[in-house]
Image 1 (cartoon, one colour):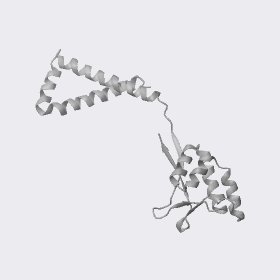
Image 2 (image 1 turned 180 degrees about the vertical axis):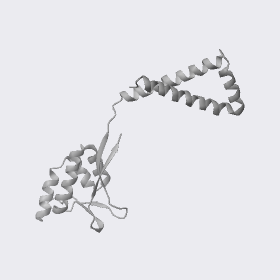
Image 3 (image 1 turned 135 degrees about the vertical axis):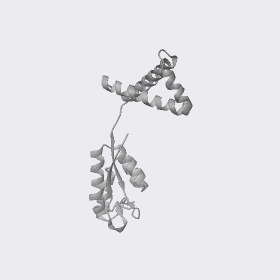
Image 4 (image 1 turned 60 degrees about the horizontal axis):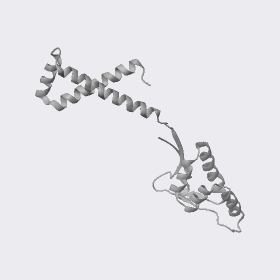
Length: 175
């Protein structure tokens, strides 16, 4: 909410912006006539200009109040992305029924993930995994990424990169 000083300053900004707009629209000759009318005591141009300022100011203020009432959420997300353009993140889900102990253990862990995360990993799409991570709370998503980094790479190479670089975590902010 604006206090009294903020409202005065906002009114002044609207006044100056409208004055500049009038000058631009009226052109060189029109500006001279406009200021002559504005400086003539009791001229109707003064009243019209003040009404225009008030109309714009109250419209802007009501829009600002409406927007401030809408819930503004500071969204933070954890996303996976390749370290460089020439690298990529490959996703590999441990196969069902494998005889390899690492893959068996990896599959057991995989089965404990949410259905959404399992579907995203099975799609082998980084975009799908990032969509699921975006829906999670940041601490939960960070834990998931750490889990995939540590256990996934050790147990089943779920997420790996070319050129031996590890997946990177990126925190993004948005509205």
